[in-house]
Image (cartoon, rainbow, N blue to C red; front, side, top):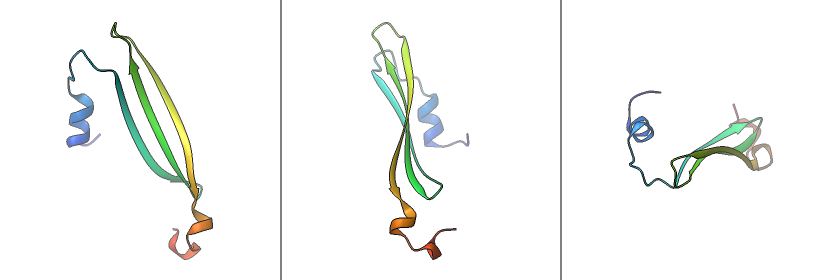
Length: 70
């Protein structure tokens, strides 16, 4: 990962009272706009559970002309 605010935030010490962290990405996969979210839920003992969700948002070939897709 390149240096910058995102890397700084992901590597920072946020203290002991974190409840949840999320990292989201919106991308195009096979002409479908997809939102992916990685979540880390913490309990009060410092343990955590990671999860990943992927949500299709829109079929781009239905709303954009083919000339705009590359």
